[in-house]
Length: 309
Image (cartoon, rainbow, N blue to C red):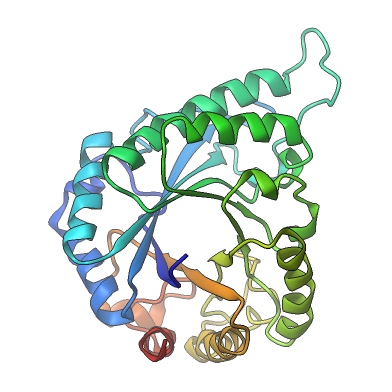
């Protein structure tokens, strides 16, 4: 696997967003300003609650297939490799890691079998689109911690996707969960979200390497980053962290994170979080306290890191 110098793009984009010239401008700026060679196109389907069985991927909350294909081909025209990442959110705001059902199916209660049927249909739909547009990798899920124990259902979902997608397939487990996924051998690549405290990277990378060595597979961080908020460097996974805006906090985190990646040649890439399809004005960057990189000091750190590889 070629090293992934990646940035996540388009999360929460709605129908019509990828048709706007601003979205193409955003993608062009992503490449120019970060020197990324890969874009991870992240999609957000919806289910009503963490116990709902049906996944909606055709509503206005999703970009259409046609505009998604157009954006992928534009990315490729810029020289970017494309990774497809169809994820799922809950409409009621519950984090997807808490999607869960009874292990033994009970009449009149929501069931794993129904959920996996709908989820697999969703994944296969985008696997077909990823295949016809020449995407290099497919991420079959993201941070779905409670679902991961359902090993056989996940294996079946991976196999269903393989029937339609010929590229590399991975699953993006959550931070600290790398050793809990028992079906890595069904995939081509191990990946996880690298939201680790700024002073704990060495410990966590040593732990993850044991998993990678056991499976003898490539590994990369499908997500990683830090908000521009005081305190975020210690809890970079907390997207609701209150605190004062601090571009310096994010910059400091990126400097440490990229240095730790340099020191570990077994890590084969990163897909940082994130870059919006519809950017805020450049002069507003100093007012954004979230994960966005555009026109912030951390953007320059990432660019220097990618250009050094």
